[in-house]
Image (cartoon, rainbow, N blue to C red; front, side, top):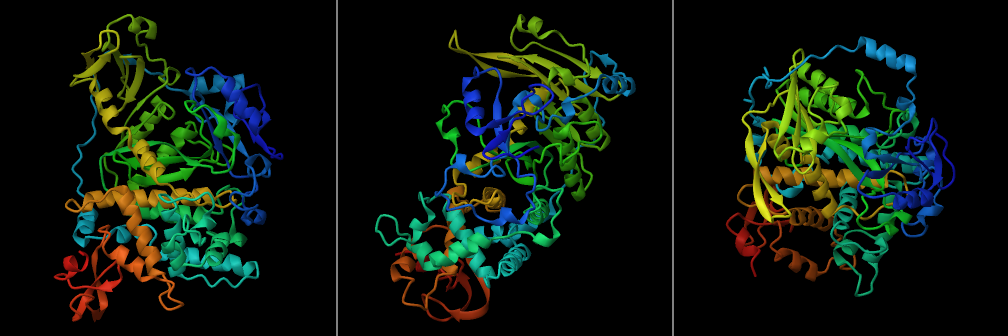
Length: 592
């Protein structure tokens, strides 16, 4: 696809070619469409030559340029209707009639019968010894976060950043402690943000932030942030648009899967890594569902722990396999990642973007349960009641059929609208009742609901819960590199996962997500504060953090030091205050 200055590539099916449009033209076209019929979403793909060296250079300050004036390689994006499935490339749409006839000839015939499903999966009996081990360690928020940004990952980023700076003839000398300080500032920007990041260091009383200013000098932060790097430019895969961050993706996926709770139910869906450029989309009506950013395929637990993720590159760089579309292929890749921990009877839930009878058959052969809403044209011509006929029946009515050869059920249910759902593991029985609000009568009515609908509604929201957690306090500081916002997304995802583990491991002393992020940011910033030069770390800062009652944890230290309260020797300290404190003195030290 060609990349022209300040242009976007749209994924609309307007003939045999993709149409190149200006950014404002795309947004205006979306505004003019009638709402309620189709959901549109804008997502950005990295430039075609994303592995080129020029993409490492910042095009300007974070607030120094308008988005419509950015180079075309940054403004490379797609507009995708929700009903288009993958919709990212037009290659799959240009099927010749001969190819269609050939596919129809080899596809197996499906025999549909009116009965309930008889699944042959084993029941879930797996235990999770790794989670029991984490509970016994009683890790602090920093300890949980460093399960993902571990020592190996931190040292890797330090080495690649120093290597890149050296290639630019700059002796950066970045250390692991300084990198953690930079991460602390990025985390802090999620709940304390300024229009310009330099305002953290301004001496004006309305903006100066002493915690940041005492931790690192402004110019040092800007220098490190500008050279932050995650791959060796001499070893980039030109066929991978995300080659600049691929090593980080691989490391994060490994750590996410290593420490993931072992559960039966998982969700798979699409997430958006928001693009922070100054765009005309800010002028869109608040109610119109248009988002701008990178699309990311995500597999999560039902509570929102991110187990596996992969940024979307379209069918140009990610070829679907097994006769599936791109979305179905990503589900299979997620299942393959899950099965590295053991071939257990996992149950995956996803929506109509991914579901097809063919995908259900593939997952069944892998020993994996699956349930998802499905579009009618992907039901392999299952002879269910016509939606118009079903709408004339009372709410709670449904029709269903089972594929005799594959043991896959397709159900059509009438509630406020007609819903098609497909499963290879859950059937109609035991059917239950669900409450439905009647707007005209202003009453709650009980309607019948098949078992697979009830389970789907309970377990499908994992990706949405993760998105909600990330959106609350997401990293606000960004650069003009095309992957800078993606790095913030990875940090936010790691914090979300660490907090999910905290909720599981710390039943007695749980903190909310905001307090969790504040604790990690404060520890990283205070640990790097310069206590020796010109009194930059004020006594007021130490006093405030000591008595703030936010996330103080006692941890073991190898070297014995004096207790800050009784002044005798101790081998424990407060992780946040960085002071030696006995367990018996811990409470008294932190109370005024």
